Amino acid sequence: MKINTTRILLAAAMTAFTTTMASATTLEDVRAAGQLKCGIHEGLAGFAAPDANGKWQGLDVDICRAVASSVFGNSEAVEYIPVTGATRFSALASGEIDMLARTTTWTFSRDTDLKTEFVGVNFYDGQGFMVPASLGISSALELDGTTVCVNTGTTTELNLAEYFRANGMSYEPVPLETGAEAQQQFLSGSCDVFTGDASGLAANRATFPNPDEYVVLPEIISKEPLGPAVRHGDSEWEDIVRWSLNALITAEELGVTSENVEELASSVNKNAEINRLLGTEGDLGAMLGVEADWAKTIIMSVGNYGEVFERHVGVNTPIGLERGVNALWTQGGLLYSPPFR
Image (cartoon, rainbow, N blue to C red; front, side, top):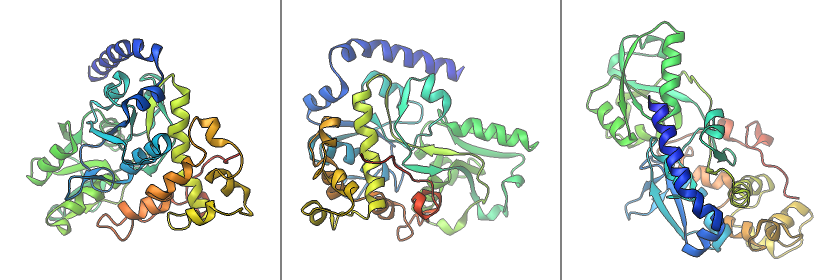
Protein backbone atom coordinates (compact mmCIF):
# COMPACT_ATOMS: atom_id res chain seq x y z
CA MET A 1 0.00 0.00 0.00
CA LYS A 2 2.86 2.38 0.76
CA ILE A 3 4.34 1.82 -2.68
CA ASN A 4 1.03 2.54 -4.44
CA THR A 5 0.53 5.73 -2.42
CA THR A 6 4.03 6.91 -3.29
CA ARG A 7 3.40 6.28 -6.99
CA ILE A 8 0.12 8.22 -6.88
CA LEU A 9 1.77 11.19 -5.18
CA LEU A 10 4.67 11.17 -7.61
CA ALA A 11 2.36 10.92 -10.62
CA ALA A 12 0.40 13.93 -9.37
CA ALA A 13 3.60 15.86 -8.75
CA MET A 14 4.95 15.09 -12.21
CA THR A 15 1.66 16.12 -13.83
CA ALA A 16 1.68 19.43 -11.96
CA PHE A 17 5.26 20.07 -13.03
CA THR A 18 4.82 19.23 -16.73
CA THR A 19 3.66 22.69 -17.76
CA THR A 20 6.64 24.39 -16.14
CA MET A 21 9.09 21.92 -17.69
CA ALA A 22 7.59 22.56 -21.13
CA SER A 23 8.32 26.28 -20.91
CA ALA A 24 11.70 26.37 -19.14
CA THR A 25 14.59 24.10 -18.30
CA THR A 26 15.72 23.56 -14.73
CA LEU A 27 18.88 25.55 -15.41
CA GLU A 28 16.81 28.50 -16.65
CA ASP A 29 14.56 28.27 -13.59
CA VAL A 30 17.53 28.11 -11.21
CA ARG A 31 19.18 31.10 -12.83
CA ALA A 32 15.93 33.07 -12.80
CA ALA A 33 15.49 32.33 -9.08
CA GLY A 34 19.06 33.37 -8.33
CA GLN A 35 19.66 30.32 -6.17
CA LEU A 36 19.64 26.54 -6.17
CA LYS A 37 16.91 24.74 -4.21
CA CYS A 38 18.65 21.67 -2.84
CA GLY A 39 16.84 18.90 -0.98
CA ILE A 40 18.91 17.62 1.96
CA HIS A 41 18.57 15.45 5.05
CA GLU A 42 16.57 17.02 7.85
CA GLY A 43 19.55 16.55 10.14
CA LEU A 44 22.36 13.99 9.96
CA ALA A 45 25.80 14.89 11.31
CA GLY A 46 28.50 14.75 8.67
CA PHE A 47 26.08 14.80 5.76
CA ALA A 48 23.62 17.64 6.40
CA ALA A 49 23.15 19.39 9.74
CA PRO A 50 23.13 23.01 10.90
CA ASP A 51 26.16 24.16 12.87
CA ALA A 52 26.09 26.34 16.01
CA ASN A 53 25.39 29.38 13.81
CA GLY A 54 22.56 27.68 11.95
CA LYS A 55 24.60 27.21 8.76
CA TRP A 56 24.14 23.87 7.01
CA GLN A 57 27.28 21.74 6.86
CA GLY A 58 28.06 18.26 5.57
CA LEU A 59 29.19 16.07 2.72
CA ASP A 60 25.84 16.30 0.91
CA VAL A 61 25.65 20.03 1.61
CA ASP A 62 28.96 20.47 -0.19
CA ILE A 63 27.51 18.70 -3.24
CA CYS A 64 24.80 21.37 -3.30
CA ARG A 65 27.46 24.08 -2.91
CA ALA A 66 29.49 22.59 -5.76
CA VAL A 67 26.52 22.77 -8.12
CA ALA A 68 25.76 26.35 -7.06
CA SER A 69 29.41 27.21 -7.76
CA SER A 70 29.08 25.76 -11.26
CA VAL A 71 25.94 27.75 -12.06
CA PHE A 72 26.53 31.03 -10.25
CA GLY A 73 30.23 31.10 -9.38
CA ASN A 74 28.95 31.37 -5.79
CA SER A 75 28.69 28.38 -3.47
CA GLU A 76 26.41 30.28 -1.10
CA ALA A 77 23.61 30.68 -3.67
CA VAL A 78 21.68 27.76 -2.20
CA GLU A 79 18.38 27.38 -0.41
CA TYR A 80 18.56 24.21 1.66
CA ILE A 81 15.23 22.40 1.89
CA PRO A 82 15.10 19.52 4.41
CA VAL A 83 13.11 16.54 3.12
CA THR A 84 12.31 13.21 4.75
CA GLY A 85 12.74 9.74 3.36
CA ALA A 86 9.04 9.71 2.54
CA THR A 87 8.80 13.18 0.92
CA ARG A 88 12.10 13.53 -0.97
CA PHE A 89 11.02 12.06 -4.31
CA SER A 90 7.73 13.92 -4.53
CA ALA A 91 9.57 17.14 -3.63
CA LEU A 92 11.94 16.55 -6.54
CA ALA A 93 9.21 15.52 -8.99
CA SER A 94 7.02 18.54 -8.17
CA GLY A 95 9.82 21.09 -8.61
CA GLU A 96 9.89 22.03 -4.93
CA ILE A 97 13.60 21.25 -5.14
CA ASP A 98 15.95 21.43 -8.14
CA MET A 99 18.11 18.51 -7.03
CA LEU A 100 18.24 15.95 -4.25
CA ALA A 101 21.37 15.38 -2.16
CA ARG A 102 20.05 13.41 0.80
CA THR A 103 21.90 10.12 1.48
CA THR A 104 19.68 8.53 -1.16
CA THR A 105 20.35 5.02 -2.46
CA TRP A 106 20.48 4.51 -6.21
CA THR A 107 18.22 1.55 -7.04
CA PHE A 108 16.60 0.11 -10.17
CA SER A 109 13.05 1.11 -9.26
CA ARG A 110 13.98 4.62 -8.19
CA ASP A 111 15.89 5.14 -11.41
CA THR A 112 13.06 3.84 -13.61
CA ASP A 113 9.67 3.71 -11.89
CA LEU A 114 10.10 7.01 -10.01
CA LYS A 115 11.63 8.74 -13.07
CA THR A 116 14.58 9.95 -11.03
CA GLU A 117 17.99 10.35 -12.62
CA PHE A 118 20.95 9.58 -10.36
CA VAL A 119 24.06 11.40 -11.55
CA GLY A 120 26.67 9.34 -9.70
CA VAL A 121 27.71 8.12 -6.27
CA ASN A 122 29.14 10.46 -3.64
CA PHE A 123 29.26 7.87 -0.85
CA TYR A 124 29.33 4.07 -0.95
CA ASP A 125 27.53 2.70 2.08
CA GLY A 126 25.72 -0.35 3.45
CA GLN A 127 23.00 -1.01 6.00
CA GLY A 128 23.95 -1.90 9.55
CA PHE A 129 22.53 -2.17 13.07
CA MET A 130 23.18 -0.35 16.34
CA VAL A 131 22.18 -1.63 19.79
CA PRO A 132 22.72 -0.63 23.42
CA ALA A 133 25.90 -2.26 24.75
CA SER A 134 23.88 -3.37 27.78
CA LEU A 135 22.05 -5.96 25.64
CA GLY A 136 25.29 -7.90 25.23
CA ILE A 137 24.65 -8.47 21.52
CA SER A 138 27.72 -8.79 19.29
CA SER A 139 26.18 -9.93 16.00
CA ALA A 140 23.11 -9.12 13.92
CA LEU A 141 22.35 -12.85 13.93
CA GLU A 142 21.43 -12.46 17.63
CA LEU A 143 18.60 -9.98 16.93
CA ASP A 144 15.75 -12.50 16.79
CA GLY A 145 12.64 -11.20 18.58
CA THR A 146 13.86 -7.59 18.89
CA THR A 147 12.04 -4.36 18.14
CA VAL A 148 13.69 -2.29 15.40
CA CYS A 149 13.42 1.46 14.74
CA VAL A 150 13.43 2.03 10.98
CA ASN A 151 12.78 5.02 8.72
CA THR A 152 9.83 4.75 6.34
CA GLY A 153 10.19 5.48 2.65
CA THR A 154 13.70 4.01 2.55
CA THR A 155 15.47 0.97 1.15
CA THR A 156 16.19 0.17 4.79
CA GLU A 157 12.69 -1.23 5.35
CA LEU A 158 12.94 -3.82 2.58
CA ASN A 159 16.52 -4.78 3.44
CA LEU A 160 15.50 -5.29 7.06
CA ALA A 161 12.60 -7.58 6.16
CA GLU A 162 14.68 -9.60 3.71
CA TYR A 163 17.60 -10.05 6.13
CA PHE A 164 15.45 -11.31 8.98
CA ARG A 165 13.47 -13.61 6.67
CA ALA A 166 16.63 -15.03 5.10
CA ASN A 167 18.03 -15.82 8.56
CA GLY A 168 14.83 -17.27 10.01
CA MET A 169 14.42 -14.49 12.58
CA SER A 170 11.44 -12.39 13.63
CA TYR A 171 11.28 -8.73 14.65
CA GLU A 172 8.80 -6.01 15.43
CA PRO A 173 9.29 -2.87 13.30
CA VAL A 174 8.86 0.59 14.77
CA PRO A 175 8.37 2.68 11.60
CA LEU A 176 9.27 6.36 11.86
CA GLU A 177 9.30 9.08 9.20
CA THR A 178 12.40 11.03 10.19
CA GLY A 179 15.86 10.15 11.41
CA ALA A 180 15.40 12.43 14.41
CA GLU A 181 12.30 10.50 15.47
CA ALA A 182 14.05 7.17 15.05
CA GLN A 183 17.02 8.35 17.10
CA GLN A 184 14.76 9.71 19.85
CA GLN A 185 12.76 6.49 20.07
CA PHE A 186 15.93 4.41 20.15
CA LEU A 187 17.49 6.49 22.91
CA SER A 188 14.28 6.37 24.92
CA GLY A 189 14.27 2.57 24.80
CA SER A 190 11.18 2.26 22.60
CA CYS A 191 13.12 -0.12 20.36
CA ASP A 192 16.07 -2.46 20.91
CA VAL A 193 17.73 -1.80 17.56
CA PHE A 194 18.35 1.19 15.31
CA THR A 195 18.98 0.28 11.67
CA GLY A 196 20.11 2.41 8.74
CA ASP A 197 23.12 3.20 6.60
CA ALA A 198 26.27 2.38 8.55
CA SER A 199 27.60 5.90 8.04
CA GLY A 200 24.36 7.32 9.41
CA LEU A 201 24.56 5.09 12.47
CA ALA A 202 28.12 6.29 13.11
CA ALA A 203 26.97 9.88 12.65
CA ASN A 204 24.06 9.45 15.05
CA ARG A 205 26.18 7.66 17.64
CA ALA A 206 28.73 10.50 17.54
CA THR A 207 26.01 12.93 18.66
CA PHE A 208 24.77 10.80 21.57
CA PRO A 209 25.55 12.16 25.05
CA ASN A 210 26.98 8.72 25.94
CA PRO A 211 28.19 7.11 22.66
CA ASP A 212 30.23 4.42 24.44
CA GLU A 213 26.98 2.89 25.68
CA TYR A 214 26.01 1.91 22.12
CA VAL A 215 27.55 -0.56 19.68
CA VAL A 216 27.38 -0.67 15.89
CA LEU A 217 27.31 -4.37 14.96
CA PRO A 218 29.84 -5.66 12.40
CA GLU A 219 27.40 -6.96 9.78
CA ILE A 220 26.71 -4.92 6.64
CA ILE A 221 23.63 -6.39 5.00
CA SER A 222 23.22 -4.39 1.79
CA LYS A 223 24.76 -2.23 -0.91
CA GLU A 224 23.78 1.43 -0.53
CA PRO A 225 25.35 3.58 -3.26
CA LEU A 226 24.30 7.07 -2.16
CA GLY A 227 24.20 9.88 -4.66
CA PRO A 228 22.60 13.11 -5.84
CA ALA A 229 19.59 12.93 -8.14
CA VAL A 230 17.63 15.14 -10.51
CA ARG A 231 14.33 14.87 -12.38
CA HIS A 232 14.06 12.63 -15.41
CA GLY A 233 14.01 14.34 -18.81
CA ASP A 234 16.30 17.37 -18.38
CA SER A 235 19.69 16.22 -19.63
CA GLU A 236 21.25 19.71 -19.58
CA TRP A 237 20.68 20.04 -15.83
CA GLU A 238 21.63 16.41 -15.25
CA ASP A 239 25.00 17.05 -16.93
CA ILE A 240 25.74 20.05 -14.70
CA VAL A 241 25.02 18.16 -11.48
CA ARG A 242 26.86 15.03 -12.66
CA TRP A 243 30.03 16.84 -13.74
CA SER A 244 30.06 19.01 -10.62
CA LEU A 245 30.35 15.77 -8.63
CA ASN A 246 32.91 14.37 -11.08
CA ALA A 247 35.00 17.54 -10.74
CA LEU A 248 35.41 16.88 -7.00
CA ILE A 249 36.56 13.31 -7.63
CA THR A 250 38.86 14.15 -10.54
CA ALA A 251 40.43 17.02 -8.62
CA GLU A 252 41.48 14.66 -5.86
CA GLU A 253 42.86 12.16 -8.37
CA LEU A 254 44.90 14.89 -10.07
CA GLY A 255 46.14 16.40 -6.79
CA VAL A 256 44.21 19.65 -7.24
CA THR A 257 43.22 21.09 -3.85
CA SER A 258 41.67 24.24 -2.44
CA GLU A 259 45.18 25.34 -1.51
CA ASN A 260 46.92 24.90 -4.87
CA VAL A 261 44.08 25.39 -7.37
CA GLU A 262 44.80 29.06 -8.04
CA GLU A 263 48.48 28.38 -8.66
CA LEU A 264 47.67 25.49 -11.01
CA ALA A 265 45.10 27.58 -12.86
CA SER A 266 47.62 30.34 -13.48
CA SER A 267 50.17 28.09 -15.17
CA VAL A 268 50.32 25.59 -18.02
CA ASN A 269 50.49 22.13 -16.47
CA LYS A 270 52.19 19.11 -18.02
CA ASN A 271 49.06 17.12 -17.30
CA ALA A 272 46.58 18.42 -19.88
CA GLU A 273 43.60 17.07 -17.90
CA ILE A 274 44.38 19.54 -15.10
CA ASN A 275 44.28 22.35 -17.66
CA ARG A 276 40.97 21.13 -19.07
CA LEU A 277 39.50 20.71 -15.58
CA LEU A 278 40.46 24.24 -14.57
CA GLY A 279 39.34 25.81 -17.85
CA THR A 280 42.72 26.99 -19.10
CA GLU A 281 42.61 24.62 -22.07
CA GLY A 282 39.71 23.47 -24.22
CA ASP A 283 36.07 24.52 -23.91
CA LEU A 284 34.47 22.11 -21.44
CA GLY A 285 32.67 24.92 -19.63
CA ALA A 286 30.98 26.05 -22.84
CA MET A 287 29.88 22.46 -23.52
CA LEU A 288 28.24 22.43 -20.10
CA GLY A 289 26.71 25.88 -20.47
CA VAL A 290 28.70 27.44 -17.62
CA GLU A 291 31.83 29.59 -17.20
CA ALA A 292 35.21 28.24 -18.31
CA ASP A 293 36.53 28.22 -14.72
CA TRP A 294 33.48 26.50 -13.20
CA ALA A 295 35.47 23.58 -11.76
CA LYS A 296 38.13 25.90 -10.38
CA THR A 297 35.37 27.78 -8.54
CA ILE A 298 34.05 24.52 -7.09
CA ILE A 299 37.47 23.50 -5.79
CA MET A 300 38.16 26.95 -4.35
CA SER A 301 34.80 26.82 -2.54
CA VAL A 302 34.66 23.28 -1.14
CA GLY A 303 37.96 21.59 -2.04
CA ASN A 304 38.28 18.22 -3.77
CA TYR A 305 36.39 15.08 -2.74
CA GLY A 306 39.07 14.01 -0.27
CA GLU A 307 38.97 17.40 1.44
CA VAL A 308 35.17 17.25 1.65
CA PHE A 309 35.26 13.71 3.09
CA GLU A 310 37.90 14.44 5.71
CA ARG A 311 36.27 17.71 6.78
CA HIS A 312 32.87 16.19 7.48
CA VAL A 313 33.13 12.44 8.18
CA GLY A 314 36.84 11.51 8.20
CA VAL A 315 38.98 9.97 10.92
CA ASN A 316 39.65 13.31 12.60
CA THR A 317 35.95 14.13 13.00
CA PRO A 318 33.63 12.83 15.73
CA ILE A 319 32.19 10.41 13.14
CA GLY A 320 35.66 8.99 12.47
CA LEU A 321 35.18 7.09 9.20
CA GLU A 322 38.06 5.58 7.25
CA ARG A 323 37.98 6.13 3.49
CA GLY A 324 37.54 2.40 2.82
CA VAL A 325 35.60 1.81 -0.40
CA ASN A 326 35.18 5.58 -0.67
CA ALA A 327 38.86 5.92 -1.53
CA LEU A 328 39.89 6.67 -5.11
CA TRP A 329 40.15 3.74 -7.52
CA THR A 330 43.90 4.41 -7.63
CA GLN A 331 44.03 3.72 -3.88
CA GLY A 332 41.94 0.55 -3.81
CA GLY A 333 38.54 2.21 -3.49
CA LEU A 334 35.52 2.56 -5.77
CA LEU A 335 35.59 6.31 -6.51
CA TYR A 336 36.07 6.84 -10.22
CA SER A 337 35.21 9.69 -12.59
CA PRO A 338 35.06 9.58 -16.38
CA PRO A 339 37.87 11.60 -18.01
CA PHE A 340 37.66 15.36 -18.47
CA ARG A 341 38.24 15.46 -22.23
